[in-house]
Length: 94
Image (cartoon, rainbow, N blue to C red; front, side):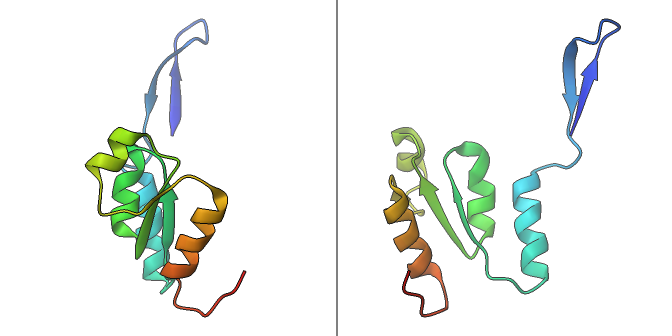
């Protein structure tokens, strides 16, 4: 991304380098045959979570959890780890 400044170097705008960069990152990883498990906490993460093989809401506000029930919602790192283990194709015991 790029910040746009005025003649006094005050930030007045921004220019996105890429639309939906989190989702695009997941697409790129999947094109390399990686299994992608993603975690996010807000609306700006939901396209990434949908694109991933498994998406997890981590410490998300109640309204986001209610609006996106297709994603498991967790609030602690231990719960997040357990969701990653469930979503993994490997037999991991961490």
